[in-house]
Image (cartoon, rainbow, N blue to C red; front, side, top):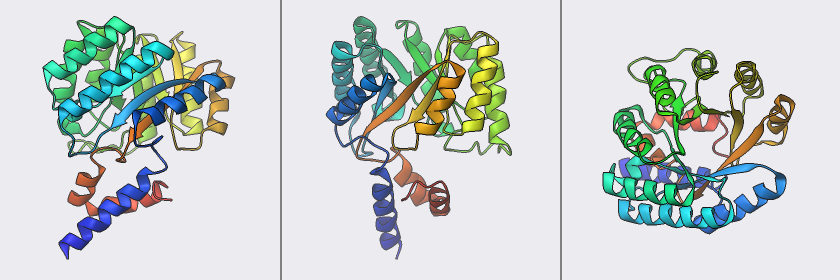
Length: 276
């Protein structure tokens, strides 16, 4: 019975993934990036790996992405996931040096709270050698308040998200309020802030608060989610927009393992429209 449930969860995640990645390969994301260029929208490309892929394979794809980005669209950033690279200093630093040499921005995605400490350790090392480095701050996490201060001190580009995974040590009752709380901490202090939400009202208020403090900011949206109407929010605020374009086979790399451990989250996927 358990085996049948596991197979069902894997099929569900695979089905959900189809609408949220540009395609299985890096070239698919690069083609979508070209479309963004025609629309005047910036982009960030990220590879969502199979959990079975070894860190060396993921690193090779990241390095190839940097070379492709640098030759065509140097304003495009690359997002990486530290767990996919095995938290290995050698792989991450090699990617960081290549990104620096080619002028490509390197952004660290956020995953579960339990891997945040190791991810931030790598961010600190990369920030010592590269100038264009970014981090993601999930509003749901209690630790994000302290991470905000570290991001400001390191001069990072910050992406603020609601966050997919809750903080088990300190559940958040009002994610919207927590999101705006981070925005207020960053406004006028951070190097650059990407407001990553498809929530029109939250995006509008966040951008207004950042603009009021003279902050460099933009709206960042996820490929595969409705975006035309929310892009108008960025236009009205007088800021740019960026599209996060994932490629790969999996929907959020650790979704399968998460659902196998917590099958009740299937209901969350359905309620959020992630299975359609």
